[in-house]
Length: 311
Ligand SMILES: Nc1ncnc2c1ncn2[C@@H]1O[C@H](COP(=O)(O)OP(=O)(O)O)[C@@H](O)[C@H]1O
Ligand SMILES: NC(=O)OP(=O)(O)O
Image 1 (cartoon, helix red, strand yellow):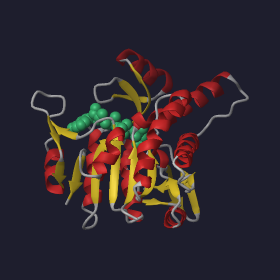
Image 2 (cartoon, protein in one colour; image 1 turned 180 degrees about the vertical axis):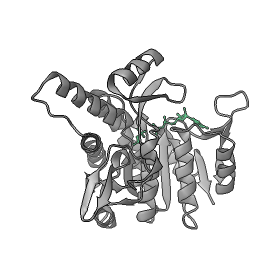
Image 3 (tube, helix red, strand yellow; image 1 turned 90 degrees about the vertical axis):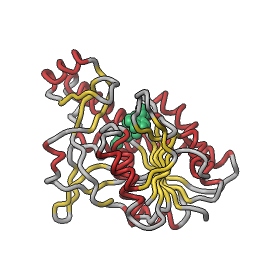
């Protein structure tokens, strides 16, 4: 076995509708199976911002229009998004493995991630979910539905929900056992279903954990060598979008922290990726994080592209 790698998939790996997702995951499966074929042990995590927003809005609209449709609590919407995305991803990976005559099994674990009920995030929603709206539509939604709407990295307005820090992964021992037995696991989907611990109970809370932080958490738990965060850009930049933009090949933890301080990474998009990468790279000697695009994942792990973050 070469490396144990946790791969965190960003929004561009999944699309915005079931039809789009079913097509896109075929491409997503290829670089993942490339890594597996090269002898790496791969654990997959993914986002769910657009999907959990879509499910929540659909259920809310249906229950308002039809008394036979029950109200769906937000954590249950998160669980639905894990199942829906995991179902498409695991089938795409399964098919790609079979096409290459690789005899491995893949499954999604419905994963709960424990958060602190007193996390400040519950008083300050920051995580964008669902579709993008114009400023006018956003104002209307705030009044009509009581949503909190915020501008998302120059792309339009989205609903924001609390995004607490992941503390632990409830199903970690099961995930570990599956990984140790050479199975491919999709876990902490959408950052995991956020739950708080009350005695012997795990109770779902209305929030969306950042998948970059949840991926980092499971990577530490599984003692992974690499955390690979796949997104729409091949590398991380400083002065992003400006005339003096500079794409980075490597970043030390100290450099990354200095650039974070200087505000080079947009909150809600690149900032959590760099923060998660820094946390992983500084958690144990030899651990490395890579931020690159889905298409460049295989080249990235060979050290040919992407931004490598190490201590
Ligand atoms: N400093 C930066 N370097 C590179 N990309 C950046 C930077 N700041 C913001 N971005 C933007 O962040 C995006 C990735 O965030 P996002 O789309 O939210 O991630 P995800 O793939 O997890 O859905 C990039 O596609 C890019 O447009
Ligand atoms: N849960 C989460 O981080 O989703 P996105 O990656 O879609 O924002």
